Image (cartoon, rainbow, N blue to C red):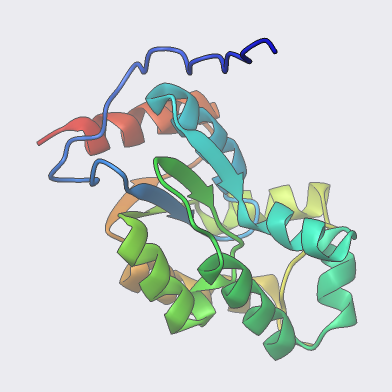
Length: 189
């Protein structure tokens, strides 16, 4: 029987500093829908040569349906409970976790993410968020009936700031720009 060889990850371009991220820790990314959490997570994981997980994809896999369809089938509270349960079920090491925008509504999910390592908040201005959501309105937004995206943005911003270990100001630059900024921050003493 031949031995199967698992290919190694490429050499990392950056290594998180132990004072910022534990050796077997994770980095979680929070922020508003359309902030670029998934793109940033993929790029940051490449720079560290770590794995990447998107918690929205975990929920989609659990239900075999797109996130918006899952969100539409549940009340907002049911969806938030589901999201928290999905996040708290993750058993990961040396992984960048892109979370859903509403993960900060459940304190137990935030505390669990903090136990894994630092939480990085990508803070993107409201006009950019509105434009991106308009381009992809079926992105799976947990919003209460009658609530506007502007209301949601203001409500969540305080929760993101409270949860964050570090904040990166996002905007119109290519995602690689913000990933490099985050990698440098996390690799410094």
